[in-house]
Structure formats: C-alpha cells, structure tokens
Figure 1: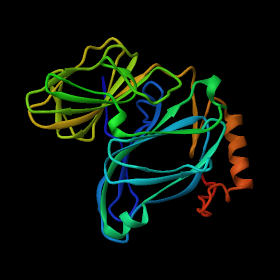
Figure 2 (figure 1 turned 135 degrees about the horizontal axis):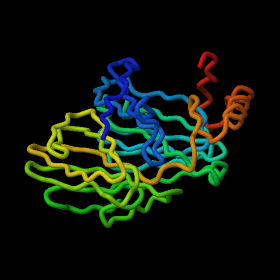
Figure 3 (figure 1 turned 180 degrees about the vertical axis):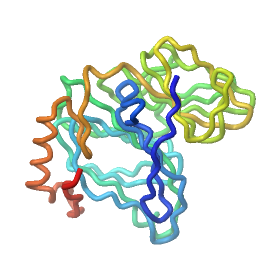
Figure 4 (figure 1 turned 30 degrees about the horizontal axis):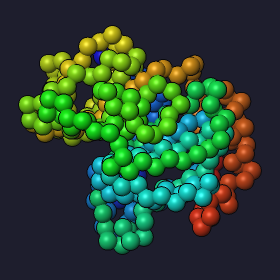
Length: 287
C-alpha cells in the first residue's frame, strides 16, 4: 500500500484543488488517470467558477459534487447542471470542447462548492470513439447499506451493485459514508483499488488515515476500513489500462503523435465550439 497526499494549488478566491493523480509514486489507478479534489470553498455573492471552453481527447471526464452546483456546456449542444450526488460522464473520444461555470442565479446568491473531477482513460480501441455525454441523477444511482456504511455506486460494478452509467472498461467508483462504529472490506473483485478520504478519518488495516489522503493497494492486498466517528470516502479502481498513456494539458492518448495533432487542431481553431460561450482557453505555449 502507498499513501498519496496530493499537490495543492490555490486558484484564487480561496478555491484550492488537490491533484491526487497522476503522482510520481502512482500514475493511475485502474483506468483513473487524473483525480482532482476541490474545496470545500464558500463563494460570496458575485463569485464562482469560470472554466472557459477547452478541448479533451482520449478520455472520459467524471464530475461528482458533494456540495454546490456547476453548469456544464459542450460542443454537442449539451447544457446540464450537475447537483450533489449526480454524475456527469462526458466521453471525449476523438474530441470534444466543454466549459464549466457557476450558473448566474447561484453566483448571485453565493454558494459553497465541494467535489471531485476525475479523468478515465479510454481503451486503445475506443480512443477515437464519437464524443457523447451522460447525466445520471442521484436518485438513479444504486445504493445499499452494509454494516453501518451507506454505499452509492457512481460508475461500474462493485458490492453487488451496477451503475446505469455506460462505461468502456472494468471500473468501479463508489461514495461510502461511514457511521460511528461501522466497517467495510474494500472490494476484491478489481485488480487495482484505492481509497480517497473526503471527510473525517478512517482506520485501514489498523492504521488511522486522515482527510485528504489517497491509499492505493496491491492487487492481492486484503483491506478493511472502519470508522470510530462519521467519515466519508471515495472507493475507486478497476482494470489497468491496456498500455501507457501520454497526458499533456487536457489531452490523453496512447501515442505522442495523437497529442501533437490535438495541439495543432486547437491552436488552429480554438473558438466557436460552444453556442453562447465564445470564450476559450488558449493552447499553453510553455508546457
């Protein structure tokens, strides 16, 4: 087992992001190649998130919120608000452009934002699939209670549950809420597995770990989680990707040539992809 602490960046207005994956000690967990934990942050009236239109290839993004909301727009014409417990799964495939902003009414009132965005690497055969978007409401996600732990499955299969979100590879991603005195073994049905502690602390195989830690386990490692007080954790993993992946800016691909082509395409025509949102993030020149 290894423990990752993440690298924290302050994006302004008190909004911090902790990047757990990729890390020098671990590049991915199953198909998860990127894992950003953000907040919680309280935005005063008039402030919010403005992630301008930007491109992706070769991956699927998964947005999951604990508090607050975000408005997703993309080049497919999708306009979708994501609320706590909902799942926004966007398949970039051969290319998509999207933006993430705070809705005007939420911005005007002030709000708290807290959540995770992760990237799922697509299998090589699906890297050039047509882009698509899925939204699953919190009420549509399967749940169960086991020994005092409330489990909600976000994507994939685990603990006898199956998410309605369509996926491309073996994966699991679950939201686990622990009550005082509860315990749960980490599923053994997946090759690569990790725990990210969102709130409180967890005892994992007899050692206490605090909020903000990601624990990554060996394939045959038996793991038991328990909590002496209220806690919350994300459980994640799946089968490893079918080969290494190149990550550059917002692009993921199995070849450097594909990354270079995506860079050239965005540099040549970065604007005009999202109706009603003409702004864009230019291609970084110094990465």
